[in-house]
Length: 78
Length: 111
Image 1 (cartoon, rainbow over the protein chains, first blue to last red):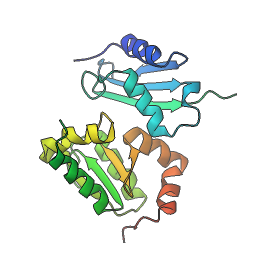
Image 2: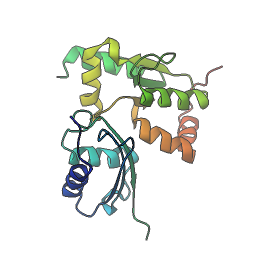
Image 3: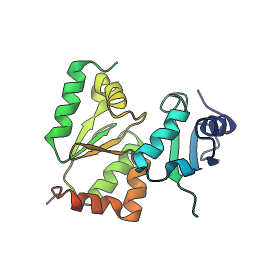
Image 4: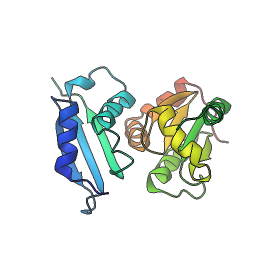
């Protein structure tokens, strides 16, 4: 059920092409991750929508294969 | 997955209180760390909230994910509007946005 960090990063970048992604394996068990995602695509969107875009990119794996992903999104500073 | 009865039940719960938290376990005994964090934040901000334990109702547990288009639990609703899950609550709490939201929406406070 666990997911590889590279696979998570790949999926996010596939869904949000200009995203900068930083994944941290929180427990070293391949099951609890934190992700920082920065993209200009988030500009002007409420946080809920920003997170939904990331979940969308993960194609339904969130809450399934991917048990825990602490997500933080941001817009690049000019 | 999301049948009409479940949809009606969720809609009713959301309309029934200013602040509604769909969570795993009860506010007194959360059954998951994320749900526990969500309860802590709401308690800290001293808002009155109604918690729905999704573990006692599999149809709500699955249905709320589709209803909100959100894959995980907990989920916070304020005055009928979906605010987000645990990460968003934590971030908004740290920046003071959550407190502002409760003030703006004039939600009831716990005594």
